[in-house]
Amino acid sequence: MSSHSAIDVAYKFLQKAASEGGSLTPMQLQKLVYIAHGCSLGWCDAPLIKDDVYAWKFGPVIEDLYHCFKRFRADEVQVTDKQIEAMVEAAGFSDAEDEIIDAVWNNYKHYSGPQLSDLTHQPGTPWYQTWRHGDSSYAGAVIDNRTIADHYKHMLAGA
Image 1 (cartoon, rainbow, N blue to C red):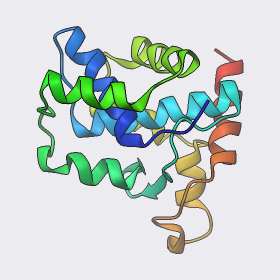
Image 2 (tube, rainbow, N blue to C red; image 1 turned 90 degrees about the vertical axis):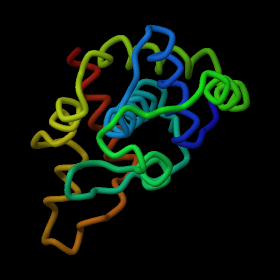
Image 3 (cartoon, one colour; image 1 turned 45 degrees about the vertical axis):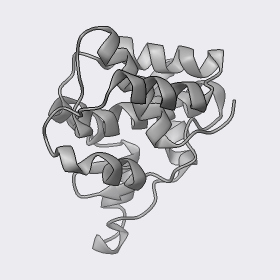
């Protein structure tokens, strides 16, 4: 497995939504990409994305992904099928990566952005551990991949 940009993984989720006649908001993309990254770390001990994940006030955020889609605010992301296909094809996802993304999609596709956000804010989550650690100086700190991996290994073992 090789790491991808978070934007590439987001386009894979946009492809899945479009294939089912749906769409996604920037918040849904943030959380789905984060969860897929966590599952990759938990199942395969390998990162799905090469981007850092930050502990922002409203949850884990991948900064490049945030900036790429922030113009859509809380609205559905509007991209063409041609854009989606070009991005996904260029990314070259492996079968294992596709399996992880498919599993996350099938488990979380019906969740709204706020529902997905709530899942990532629970006590004990990597975001919670990083955000609440010590004092407010940790705001915006990188959430360590080891912390994410440990959380998802534990979560997946109980599933």
